[in-house]
Figure 1 (cartoon, rainbow, N blue to C red):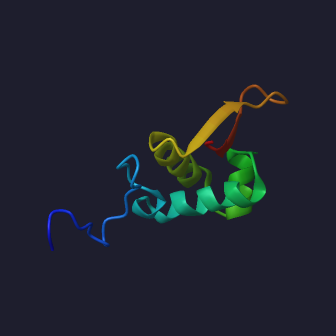
Figure 2: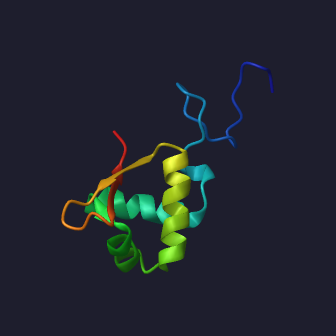
Length: 88
């Protein structure tokens, strides 16, 4: 393979060089898909919908936020919680 060819095993976005969703743990992928299909949700709502435990959802959201794939805002109905959604 030449230096100009890309390795098909490495999943990176062409424009930024950042890892994409395929490099994240399965729990992060599931949480991302739940948010993609259901829209913005709290951690509790994500846990209910995905059937993952709260700790796993928290971990997955942390990974997604680190990769800037998900953003959070204060949930106005209960300021102790945050609403998560797919980043624009």
